[in-house]
Image 1: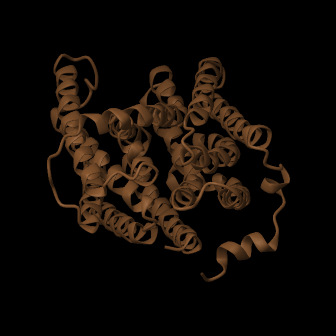
Image 2: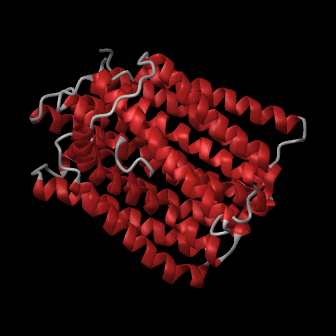
Image 3: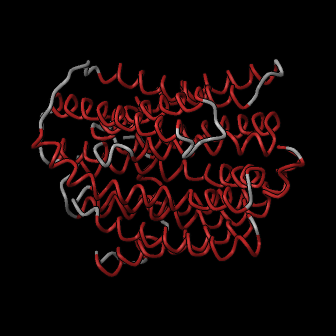
Length: 422
C-alpha cells in the first residue's frame, strides 16, 4: 500500500472526522451543559486510561514482533488475544471490587461501571486490531471502517437531540457502543477468527519490549489528561465540563499528526532502516508542523464563537482553547517524531521525554490552577507541550544528526511528494 495514498486517505478522513466531531460536540454541549459534560467526560477519561494502558504494553508490541522479529501472524494474534481477555477479567474484578467498597467512582451507578468495563474490552481489541492494519499498511481500509462508525455515532446523537432526549446516559452509551462496533468491524476485516493459545516465552519478550512503550504511552496520555484530573479535584465538575470543551476543540488538531503517525509507522516498519526512513521522517514531520500552524491560525479567531455555538455556559473555554491550540503545535512535533524511535527498537527515548513532560505538567498545574483556574491549567499544558516538541527536535538534531532546516524549510517538492499520485 502506498505511503502517499495512506497520507492522502488519512487527511481526507480526518477532515471529515473534524467536521462530524465539531457538529456532535455542539449538540452534546447544548444538551448536557457544563455539569453534564463534565460528568460523562470524567468516567470516559477513567475507562479510556484503563483501556489504553491496562494491557501493560502488549498491544504496543504487536507491530514490532510481527515485522522486526518475524513472529507468525496467526500465532501472535491468538496468543495476544487470549492474554488480553485474561487481563480484562482481572481488571474487571479489581474495578468492581473497588466500586463496591466505595473506593472510587462512587457517584456512578453500577450500570455505568459495567458500561465502562465494556468500553475497556472494546478498547483492548480495537487497539490490537488497528495495530495489525498499520503494520500491513492497510490504512485506507481501516479509515473506511472508522469513518463508518463515526457517521453512525453522529447520526444517533443527532436523532436523540432532535427528539429532545439526549442526556448523559445516552451520550455515554453511544460512546461505548460505537467503540464496540469499531472493534468488531476491524476484527471481521482482519479475518483472523477466534482461538485460544498461550506462549509464555513470546509473552515474556513482548512485555519486555512493550512495557517500555506502554509506560511511555501512559506518560504521554497522562501528560494530555492530568490537567483534567487536577481541575476535577481542585475546581469541581462544572469547571471540568468547561475545560474539557477547550481540550476537545484544541485536540481536534491532533487528528492530523495522529493520523499521519499511523501511516509513518507502517511505512517505517516496511522500509529498510537507513536514509530512506530518515528522509520520510523529516518530510512528514515538516508537513505536519506547517499544517498544524495553519489550523491554529484558523482556530484561534474561531474560538471566540464558542459561547455562541455551544452556549453561554462555555464562555470560559475561549481563552483556554486559544492557549492550548498554540501548545498543540509543539506537541504535534513529538507525536510524529516518536515512530522513528519505536520502529528502530529505541522506545526509551520516548519514555524519557514523556515522563519529563508529565512531571513538568503536574508541577505547573499544581502551581497555576490555584492562581488562574482553568486558564492556569491551559498555560501549564501549553508550556509542557512546548517542552515536549522542542525536546524531540533537539534529540533529532543533536543525537540523530538531522539538520534543523530539514524540519523547517518547506519546499514544493515536499508537497508534491505527498500529493503526487503513486
